[in-house]
Image 1 (cartoon, rainbow, N blue to C red):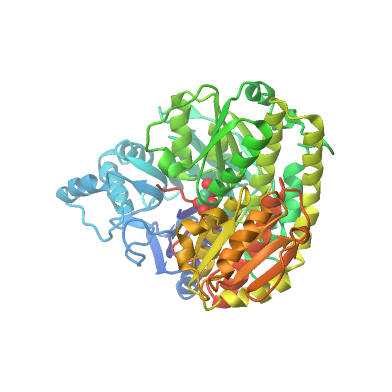
Image 2 (image 1 turned 30 degrees about the vertical axis):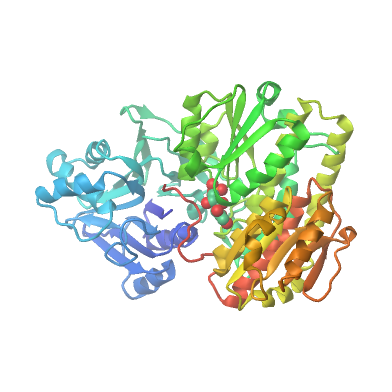
Amino acid sequence: MCGIVGAVSERDVQGILLEGLRRLEYRGYDSAGMAVIGGDHSVQRAREVGKVAALGDAMKANPLAGHLGIAHTRWATHGEPSQINAHPHMSGERLAIVHNGIIENYQELREELRADGFEFTSQTDTEVVAHLIEKNYRALCNLHDSVRAAIARLRGAYALAVVHADEPNHMVVCREGSPLVIGVGIGENFIASDQLALLPVTDRFMFLEEGDIADIKKDGITILDREGQSVEREVTRFEHGADSADKGEYRHFMLKEIYEQPKVIKATMEGRVTKTRVLEQALGTEAANLLENVRHVQIIACGTSYHAGMVARYWIEELAGVACSVEVASEFRYRKHVIQQDTLFLCISQSGETADTLAALRQAKKAGFRAALAICNVPGSSLVRESDLVIMTQAGPEIGVASTKAFTTQLTALLIFTLALARHNGLPEEQEAEIIEALHLVPGQVSDVLALDGEIAEMSKAFMDKNHSLFLGRGSQFPVALEGALKLKEISYIHAEAYPAGELKHGPLALVDSEMPVVTVAPNNDLVEKLKSNLEEVRARGGELFVFADRKADVKAEDGIHVMQIPSVHPITAPIVYTVPLQLLSYHVAVLKGTDVDQPRNLAKSVTVE
Ligand code: F6R
């Protein structure tokens, strides 16, 4: 959460920083601000409540000129969204700082600094860090040393960028628990929370390790590690097209990303499967060794990624015959575990920077799991760097806050992983071939579902004036229903709950009336007849049903039952395909309701705080 960007250059940095903020806005959009060191070696600052565009407008009237600057887009944690709480924060007139993360011991530091005579103007934890560094600066007269001494006293997570008017040629940046990347330019250098922010200015990046502190000058970068030793960090090139932060012809990033799914699902399969088999070596040289003795899989994730993990549990137990548990990271990290022997720890994360997921991984590495596998979409992310084995999804940058293509590519990667594991556990070759053949059909089937967009938009009108909705699925479609409900609530703000259809009669059926639309996914699997009985239970209570069904499932459109036919799909791959109409439904409901589809209220894309 929160995005930070910084630049030091021959040219004026305001434009670079504003564009960087615009690209980071998915991380937070309560307020935005910028501080630049001008030619007169003073700090100029601008801060506005609301989106980056508001800051841009304000800066048209009062531009900030200078060759060194830092900027921030905020997702409020300590203190309401307001100009006073917006970053950059300053200590006195000469030091400015931007921060992503949470300082847990800020209250005690605040009291101490207050006793030292520092005055606080905001409710943020970040202002404490600004004063702490300034206090050190008064004694040490060196920004790098002052930052190092300050962070030694911080508990929590942070990525920081700091400038001081007395040292107008460089910024000092550091990270611990929050992402930070250095963009390497020619005669200019940059920093940001995410490489996406810097794609207009560079495609070469260095990822800081936990505990690193770096000095960024326009003609040089020096990095010291936690122990103060000088270190080199590898420069990598950005792999995806630089246009990924553009909406192109689409009205919203979310719609663009929904439409990219056939392509990115295919890309996630490429090099990992033949026509009939999984190429196990493509999962890493260690894969065969690692999978051979796995007796249990523990999946950890949050939100949409957690739903992907829930689908995978059905696959892993059915195809590999290996026991599988799935838990949200924020719960897992705070309880005691009984770890079965030879358990593989599997984290799923789009961003690879989700604080709870990373914390769970770090615990797991100490706790005696067999190995840690990550399914992730962001190369170079903390999760990727800290896991033993990685399967990258090939979704490309996902900008819309509501996750879409990340989910379907996670499912694709998880199914490939499952088949590799299943092979070690006796899955017959013919069955592997049957499923891989079915997987090859998925991009085309998703395209067929996308062709229903107009009809789904029409269907969405029935949800516009509703306050509540129910999503039903059975078996591996239950997590799909959960994901559909999550999408609807996060972007349209309609309350949506998902239930396994068989559970309806144990309580939620009491909610059903004509004001409660019930959405159901009904592929043609061995549970479809049972699902149909559940639908009758809803209909008998006056509920209106919206069913996405396989033609062969023979669900009839009648009074109170709207049926949209979905191409026939293999029961194993059905969760991937059936997710797509639910994404489109949520999207169109949100558009009709006029909500901010790409940046829904109170949310941010990458949840790097606890
Ligand atoms: C929902 C959504 C979130 C994320 C969750 C985990 O649309 O995007 O629920 O799935 O915050 O994020 P990652 O996958 O980056 O760990």
